[in-house]
Length: 237
Image 1: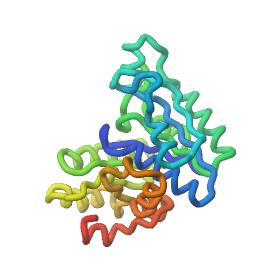
Image 2 (image 1 turned 60 degrees about the vertical axis):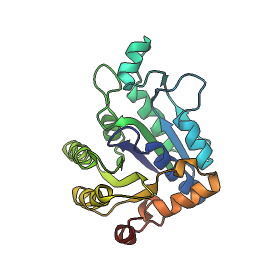
Image 3 (image 1 turned 30 degrees about the vertical axis):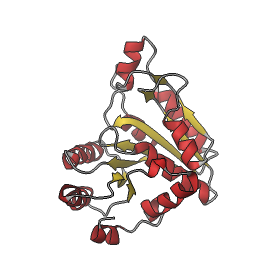
């Protein structure tokens, strides 16, 4: 049994695609897998959300979206604006523990970054990971303020005594520039370990068979794939 919490250095870095890749590889090797999304924000009722994307890409059907808010805000702010109760991460932890009794892998995908607020008391996905004793997989972008955002996220992980499962680039560009290439060395230095994976931008638009192949190439051995950071680093993907 294993629980893995997926968080990001920012929004739009590819958390859902990485979550789907983890689920797809677990399913491919015959492991029972469940995916939990504590809060979906920025998507109206009835529209496909992150969990639907995970199902489409991975074929995994044991999925749970615990709350949905249409405003593109933090879960706490979105619940407040909608006049709805906030997400209970304590209830989420109970569900994850129950799922972990019958699933080989439970993947929990957070909303936004590690310290995004889920309720008015300031509960975060970091608190959930700590209560579950789960490792945290950090999904990062490249370019812009990536290195600073990654440094802040990793510092919070260390400060809170959370175990880093690895650092994955969620959207590696087809034509990386000097900024993106430079970020690879900086990210590995920050994490004090090689990259745990890099998925090409656009992987989420693939059909299922092609996506599973991309996941296999894009995630490292500890995550069920065959990604080797050395040739990636040498050839820049």
